[in-house]
Image 1 (cartoon, rainbow, N blue to C red):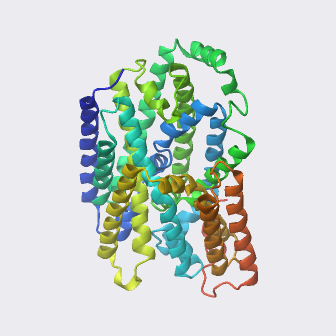
Image 2 (image 1 turned 120 degrees about the horizontal axis):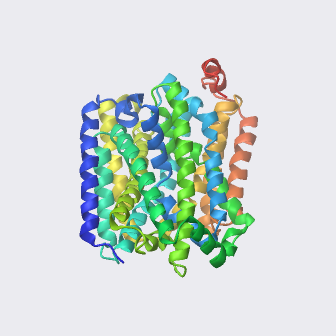
Image 3 (image 1 turned 135 degrees about the horizontal axis):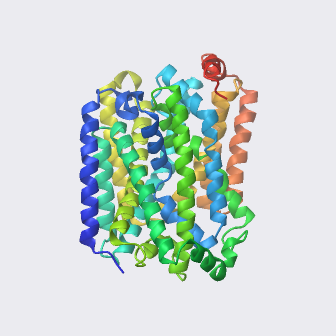
Length: 491
């Protein structure tokens, strides 16, 4: 069974109208300041902030890539994703510090915060540059994911150009005019749509396989090795370590999610936001894993495991209206991640690269809008080109962003850390990541890549900080934020 393209266009059109309505309402609430455009005025409640964070984090990756990993490697995919879920516990420690520092000093971008901490704009600019280099290809993969999904369910009637065009137009439309307020509101709607539609679709898939008991029996009988550790071939300890370690630190190393910690209106909302993120993540992880095992029973001989979700969607087990609902949910998730990254990049450029005196609110907003368009155009172009270098960088992105982790941890907890330590750590780690992956051809599945990046970044940060002196004007976050953190009984 394939889905008529006109039905897909209709579903996308209806959701577009809904998103435009939210964006128009959001635009009317804007006050014209950079903080309002990039952070929704720091007045977002816990539910919207939590769902926005979840939609940005749990993108189309879940029902395309994670489902494919389950299809290919079995139960090990659950362990891999649970490592990421465990990493969200870092929010309990870091979220109060991110939020309080941003509120106290008026920071808009994460890089700006760490540049101010060390009193060296080079730190902010280097962190912003590394973020941009390793996040741009990730945007491309979101576009490619949209193309794979729409093409798969329509028997290629939806070509890659049409898919990328849809993603680009929606991402620009929901981001350009109202900024983060529009993105956050549409993110929240997208997150709710994604999890509800996925639950309904999974229910139909399991029912179509004879019910939950029959579904389990088929899995045990047909694919027993998929239920064992390490599984049928994908997972080994080295592979597991190589993929899991960067994902564990995702919550603090990726600026598009770290910036979400700036937007909540008060400390209580920030705490409740964490609960919303954890609850969403736990539910959606289980959905993606069960979805992958269902696809394995319905279409057991796929050459490309990324087609597992489209194969299940067109299997005939799931009613067309539910298929369309889930397709829109996955599409929305990819767009959510794309526009969140684009907006964060806009903030990084506007706040960290421009001359401070010349950058008033109007200029910063204008710069942010230009960057949003450029990022989405870049992602669209390279998604259409399928350039090898972008594929390599996309695989490298999580390991590359890890180079900032020692600086982030040291900024909050080690008063003796220095700006020189931060500069050497991030530069050295990024060069090692690029050299190993692009020159030596070390696979992202090889623990040598992530292990070397982590060791070099941490070693340089500690070693250089010990032999250099902190900037006398540096902000001691541990000391300055301590009383307020103690007041709120934060860890």
